[in-house]
Image (cartoon, rainbow, N blue to C red; front, side, top):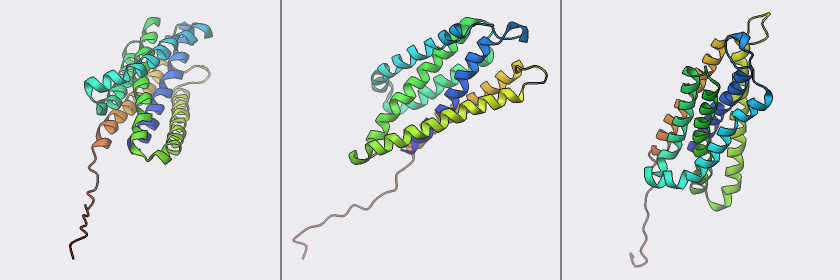
Amino acid sequence: MLTANTTGVFAGLGMYMLLPLVTRYVQAPTSTGYGFGVSVVVAGLVLLPFSIASVSASRLLPVVARRLGRHTVLPLGALFLAGSMVIFLFARSELWESFLVLGVAGLGTGLIFAAIPGLIVRSVPNSETGSALGVNQVIRQIGFSTGSALGAVVLTGHTVAPDPLPNGAGYSVSALIGLALCLLTAVLAFILPRRAAPSRPRWTSRRNDC
């Protein structure tokens, strides 16, 4: 449960820092020195690879778990998400690169959020499954909303009056923060399941001892 909830909140933070970041970036006018000045429709199409990749990754989850081991799915998904941050950080001069960024991000989030429910179901009694999944969903939403707000704060902090738009450095700083969050998610997803459980005494009884 700790692995599922911790991974969910940090992955949500990273994901919702990236999604508004990319869609806002591609809509920024070229006069800013970055961006492509695309319409809202094109910005929406940029999100299409994310949706396709996330659905595909969730369908491929059993294959990945069988070939690489179930314990590698969450760290692998977090590394894909981190990879999308790296691509956005260093390659965003062409519009097609934004499609690539969100495609890689979709693979990561698809693996993470498809694996979490199974992890929860295996970790709690059957009678507590609904409650545990509900709590995880709330925690994810906290990560989503916090990540979106954090990205907005960073971009606002890099907006110099009277210019209403942030400078290019704001997007780089946001990507760096998102990268750090995704790497932290990968580390936690790798370490937490391996924490040694406290040993419990094994009691045996025999009726004919006396």
